[in-house]
Amino acid sequence: MSLKIYNTLTRTKEEFKPLEPGKVKMYVCGPTVYSYIHIGNARPVIFFDVVRRYLESIGYEVTYAANFTDVDDKLIKKAAEMGVTVPEVAELFVQKYYEDTKGLGVREATLHPRVTQNMAEIIDFIAGLVEKGFAYEAGGDVFFRTAKFPEYGKLSHQNLEELQYGIRVDVDERKESPQDFVLWKAAKPGEISWSSPWGEGRPGWHIECSAMIRKYLGDSIDIHGGGQDLTFPHHECEIAQSEGLTGQRMASYWMHNGFVNVNDEKMSKSLGNGINVHELLKTIPGQVIRYFMLSGHYRNPLNFSDEAVEQAKGSLARIENCLSALKHRLKTAEAGEVDPEIAAAVRTVQQQFESKMNDDFNTPDAITAVFELVNAANPYINREQVTAPTLELVLKQFEAMDQVLGILAPEAEDLLDEEIEQLIVERTEARKAKNWARADEIRNLLTERGIVLEDTAQGIRWRRS
Ligand SMILES: [Zn+2]
Image (tube, rainbow, N blue to C red; front, side, top):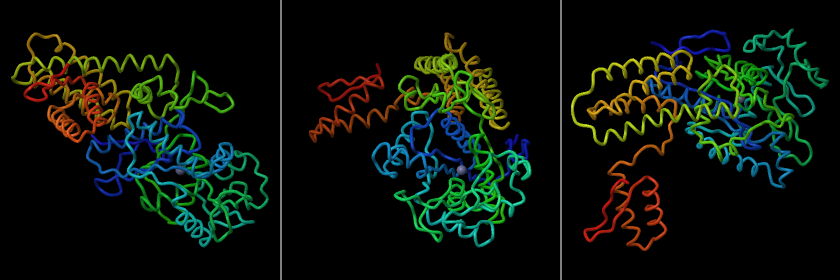
């Protein structure tokens, strides 16, 4: 059973073959940090987190880079509105990004490079393109010469002639051709800028990703991902820049996720229906949003609505109820062998889960496998006789699948005995040191996890409530 990935470049599902055995280099375009992320931004963040987790679960060592665009027109405008500097706006929303994505159960990428911290590499990249004839300077701006890259259009499956008609008329007379795109923009007076061979300015959006990928991951990577709206022009331009400069294939597999609609309408500024994740997390648990995102195939559009949220809540509750009942039943289960019937069911579920994930990361069908396990496990909860190894096997399988999907709340996990005892020791030491704040903090943490402490003559005793 091998992993197959749908490649936008070839429009087919291809068998996944990494450049280097056992290793995967993956890059996903990240947000422009001028505001909170909305649910449209959250979709690739959650989905590619699952891609990374799955690749790791089948034994790959994954280097995953997701960038922040921390300087552009929107940041400059926002900084002026807020009366702060561009780096201050960026820092604020980078922190909010980490907070909100953590709330969605997303693990931090291996690398989160920022544009402003890679300016030297970006300028070098552009200089290399100019030197090779792939770019030209005009009045302080630098443009990419698309005519020099005949494959321009290969990702979005358009040819240059079609593009002539397809794109909106560009009136910039300094360009040799309307498809040429900007690599470096001359600074307007008072704007944040960097020195370059073409004068003061800042980079265009497309070049940033090309330069950061080259610096952090190399000339060729395995997987390049992002939202479907980035296919053209952003990713098309990345290919032209990177392959123009290095002569190497930039990425083996191009993956694009579909849009998130809100109440069956496209999300847009003018409709004012963009939903920001920070607000959403105040009323909806992150796991529910995550479940919703994974309940549809990543290449299809998803429709966000109150009804969809309720459905996700209900489905997730079915899994969680089963899990907590299993854990509860485990406390009184007897020793013995694993029930052969459940062992067979677990094997089938694991195979089903893997074959669905191997089929271009089909998360909705992988979730169906999770429910197969719920169905197989439920009858055991009320059985008079059930062995602990039987229940433990089921719990272990749930855990293995959740390592990939990440839909179960981590709070549901019980503290281990040794963790509890270590916390009690730490609390005793804190009290000795008269660090009452820390001592209270530990007691509260234990209370939250259902652990009751009793001061006795023999010392502290604990029990689960
Ligand atoms: Zn990008």
